[in-house]
Length: 211
Length: 211
Image 1 (cartoon, each protein chain N blue to C red):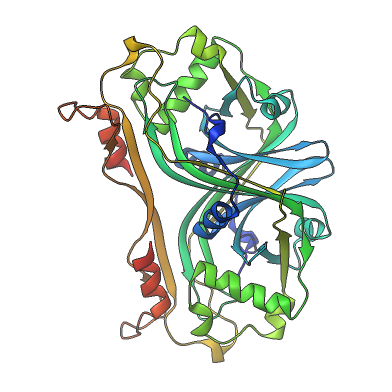
Image 2: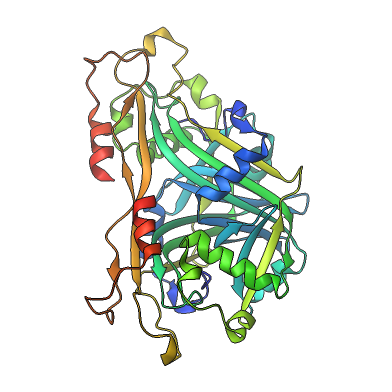
């Protein structure tokens, strides 16, 4: 099986490719170094122009450490398809991945309130205009952090192609191709206290159509 | 918006929960430390009993470094739903995530051949019995590495619940609930050289049914 980073021509160097990958996913993996060891955590995020914004609880010790200027790497991966070749060796995956490297910084108010709205709208587009703004107490309980997107600070790889044909003629024959994968939304499940006559909000209807 | 690690009661400590998360995903993020900085890469993987097996090209420098006993953390995240609360602050995601921490080791032959078959079958179940085994040349070009699953070396978090109800009565009202997300396979796309009369293999038919 071909490892997904093997094909080096898959690297994309245009900034639009980075933005497109970052804007397509909702969750990524934040990595940093704590006491010399790698430390990772999955996080919801949003891209805000030239930065990735993330948020954590102000009570989370490790995250506070991360936010204090520590070097970080943030990785986003979308698995787009399973690439079935005529041999195991040439089989692989179609995917989009981005890594952003830099030093995290804490976002102060009032910028933090903006960043948090942006993260909400990345997860549930339009939701921030349907409900009240976050209160001071809520904002105080949330640590908004930013990872700057710097010119040399990111890598993008995209594989979007049929399987490679095996070199040996003897291996040719049989089926080969791609099984595309995509994420779809199911029917929304109302919380137990929501009465049947309550309208599903526009943001939720859009989520279902949009996936 | 509630960050996905906020609710500490989400931790699962039974090994079956770890196996279940690891066995449900195909791609994860491997993190290590290179020159004091965090280094991350998305990787296809499989669980093989008490270890996570990964593979890379023997030509990949950074991966060779990783395989040389460096401390690593491997993170897998499945986004299962969007949790729409009555406030932005209480909105979050349903997810399953696992982090395995340990030191990577290179897998030698003949164990490596077994590990590579296992990785193929994790991506395309049953495919290894439909095509020939990997050749010595193919095996020599592939670096199989293992991350041991040790008793204290992993963490699992699972959120699978309705939105939290906001504390303030004033915030109650309107719709709240979960939009479930799942990954589905589309119609397989044959490679350009595959003739229309070529049968889709059983493994590919299973992939489509299984997602």
